[in-house]
Image (cartoon, rainbow, N blue to C red; front, side):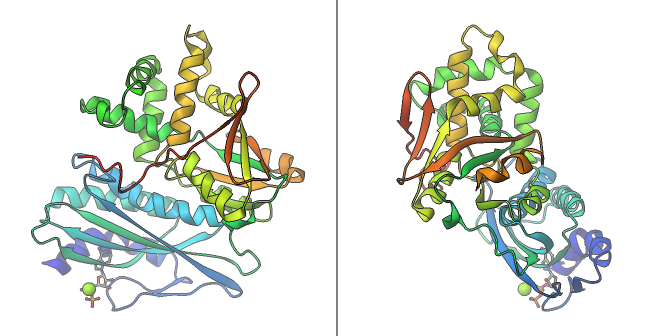
Length: 358
Ligand code: ADP
Ligand code: MG
C-alpha cells in the first residue's frame, strides 16, 4: 500500500526529472540512500523546512499550492545562499490516504521541481497515527563553487547598502485577505490596527489582491538572483518572517545597524500600486503597507547588503530590486523619514510559538 502510493505519486511522476539529471542523480527513489554527485571543486548546501497543517497552511488550501510552497520555501534558502539546486527529499506524515489530496500535492510539487530543475530523490512516508493533521518536511540540496562560501549573515559592513527584491509584505497582504475571506481577520490584527487593515484591504485594486494571494501561495524563489549576486552581495537572507526580524538577524550577526529610508520603501510599494496616490488617505494606506513589510511573512524575497560600488551592477539585474537603506554603526534597525527623522523599529516578526492560529 505504502509502496504503491510512493510509486504512484512520487517515483513515477518525478522519474523523468531525475533521469534528465544523470550527472547529478546517480541513484534516486527506491533504494536505501539516494546518491548525488556534485561538481568538482563545489560545496554542498543543504536546508530543511517543515509545514504543519493549520499552522503553515490551511486545511482547505488546494494541495497543489501546498506542494508548490513546500519546495519554494526550501529553494528560497538555496537562493539566499547563492547555491543552485541539486535535488530534494520529502517526508510526509499523513493521518489517512487521501488520493485527491496526494494527486494535487504531487502535481504542484512537480510543477516547481521541474521549473527549477530540482529532482525528488527520496523521502519517507508515514502514518500520523491519531494526529489528525498532515505534516510535511522537505530537505533540499544545492551546490556552489568552493570559491563562493555563501552569503554569511555576519558579513554586512558599515557603509554598505541594503537591498530588497520584489515587495516584501505582499505575502502578508495575501494572508490578511485569506483570513478576511474566512471571517477571521481579528485573529491577525489587534486593536487599532484592525480598522486600518480593513481600510487597506478595501482600497486594494483587484489585480493587486490577486498578486498578493499568489505571493502567499505560490511564491517564486529567487534562485537566479541568488546566483547573480555571487561576488556582489556580502550578507544575504530570504525573508520568511518579516523584514524587521530578518534584518535583525543581519544586524545582530554582523554587529551593525540598518537604516532604512521610508521614501524608498514607499516607492517600492508604489511600483506595484501606482494608483495609491489617488486615494485621499494615501499617506495612511502607505503607513499600513509599511507595517506589513516590517511584520511580513512568507515572501521568500531576498534582502542583502552590498558595497555601494556594486550599486549599478545590482540595479541592472532587475526592475524590482530596490536599494532601501544603508548599514551604519550600532545594533538597531531604524527607519528614516524627512518629516519624523529616525525611528527605531522593534521586531514585529512572526513568532512560531506566539502567533499560532487556531
Ligand atoms: P527505507 O525504510 O528502506 O528507508 P522506505 O520504505 O521508507 O525505505 O522508502 C522506500 C523508497 O521510497 C526509498 O528510496 C525512499 O527514499 C522513497 N520514499 C519514501 N517516501 C517517499 C516520498 N514521500 N517521496 C519520495 N520518495 C519517497
Ligand atoms: Mg523508511
